[in-house]
Structure formats: structure tokens, C-alpha cells
Image 1: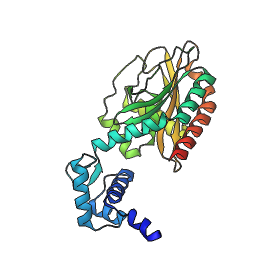
Image 2: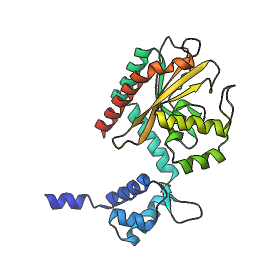
Image 3: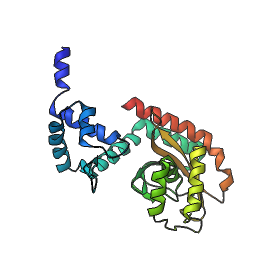
Length: 258
């Protein structure tokens, strides 16, 4: 029985998935040789598998090198899978319960390129805050969830991003100075808590806390938006404790579903 199970795990599909897993979890683009070593497969076999995955846009070669990175189709599939997981019954109900408890719109967002993609949202009837519907996108630099993801970048990567990003002003308070944004992101990195002060739209403030997997990796941000006429920017900290509790519950629900 054990031998048959071992054979079953060494089928062509298993090898393809193993290659995808190694590339997807690499901290940076990875060489074919490193993939072969991680998968315990011959390099020629990995070349053949990678060719199949490249053809389907699940993997790609980094421009100007032979290193491998995730392809557009895998990114799209990952977004859809993560979004579905966030909208799963338990995770969504936790989000709804939080919205009802604090009386504000709540949303879960993930990073896609230079934007926050909103994977799930819960409506609070009495709130006049900004409601980010599922599928909506917003820039990283002016949203609380976006700042969480910026704070997770290694310093060198963040500086590169900062030097190439277009900090578009969406509202009078949008941070468009690289030096000012660097200061804010450094504070977020230290506090593990992000806030935005009428930076997406005038009259709306917001904050966000991280949702992390069992290894501590940031997988999403849990954010809220609040009318500044009801809650001033300085009063957002009152939401931190219930938001962090909900984020921990959502992380546990996602882990249990794996």
C-alpha cells in the first residue's frame, strides 16, 4: 500500500505541481538548476516540465535572464483561488460579524502588482464610509491595506518601487512625496498597523491590520473605512483590537480549510 501511494505521488501532474510550488514560494526568481535540486528531479526533466508550464503562461522567464518566475495565468489563478477562500462561509461570516460589531464597512484586500485587489467585503448599513466591493482595485500608496504590503517589502525592493512608482493624487491628502511615504511605511513596518487620512477620497479615513499565514507571511490585509465626520483620524486606534481579533480568526479559518 505504501509503495502504491508513493508511486501515485510521483505522477507527471505531481511533478508539474511540485515545480510550480517551488517557483511560487521562492523569494526571488529562481534558476532551473535550483528548481531541479528542490524537486529532486533531473535538470532535463525540469526543462521539459517548465516548457509545458511556460506554454500555458503558468511560469515565465525573467526578462534578460534564464531565471523563472510565476506567469500571468498562475497569478490570475492564485487571485481567483485566494478570493474564493476569503469569501468562504466562515471567513466571510467573520468579516460580516466584524462589520456588525463596529458598525463600519470592512474589506479584505491582497496585493496585485501596484494595486490592492479587494477579495471580500462586508457592508455596514449605518456607515457612510467608502465601500470597496469585491473585485474593486485601489493604488497601494494611498490605502491602508496597500501600506501594509509596502511595509513587507525588503528595504532595497521598497526603495526600487518608490523610485519607479507613480504616486497619483486621488484626494487632497494623498501622499505624493516619496520621502513622506517612506516615513509612513517605516512606521507601519514598526507598528504592524496602517491608517489613511482622507487619502483616497475626502471625508473618509481608514485603517488596516495584517492577515498572516502560519509562517507569518502577509497574505492579505483587513481594512475598514470610516466617515471622518464621525470618527477622526486620531480615533481610528479604537478599532485595532477587534480588527486584529477578526484577522486572527480569518487566518485560522483559512488554515483549517487547507
